[in-house]
Length: 253
Picture 1 (cartoon, rainbow, N blue to C red):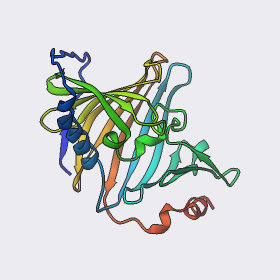
Picture 2 (picture 1 turned 90 degrees about the vertical axis):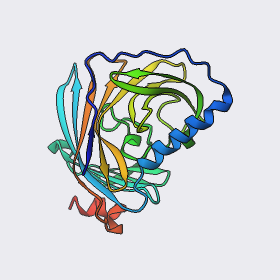
Picture 3 (picture 1 turned 135 degrees about the vertical axis):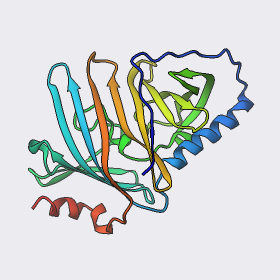
Picture 4 (picture 1 turned 45 degrees about the vertical axis):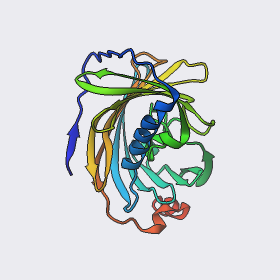
């Protein structure tokens, strides 16, 4: 597994070039968004890993979560199984296309939830565990050229095409040479900054290139953030029965 490291500087210096962008220039940016989405997808293989979340909350302190993830992009399916903390062990999420289910082993009940919701009171969203869909979920409002740390980037402003995504407006910082997203600022309908996301380390996994270290910063609560690290990464085939409600019920018996 070849890794590409990006270290977030203590201070991110943005120098935006004064570029006037015409609507017909968006074809190049649209192609970049399509490339981002394509290289984040596992088209011919399954994907599994252990996701470790460190949630820092100024009121609750620091909490650690361990989540086993199984993902099959062909069919838009994933299964998340919480292993830590003990109080939440066995809780899980099953995505089947547009339907996301949450399973609570204490009640043995499934409840319908949304990709837009936060994951277990962390700063991650349920949608963060799947592949990106910038090209299909967003329209381009504009872009600039600039720098982020030592990287030459495109700063791309996006508006959601509908309300199916967690954030109606997003600004992306994308490397010019490799088309990797280094940073995202995510806004509400009133364009209030809700969350900043830093993608500090990427890895080539099979034919895909995915972030394996991320930091999600809550911009509404000072000092609240979630660090996510992926380990035990595999592209080995996953049995079909894993992507079922019966599997979540069975592993909790």
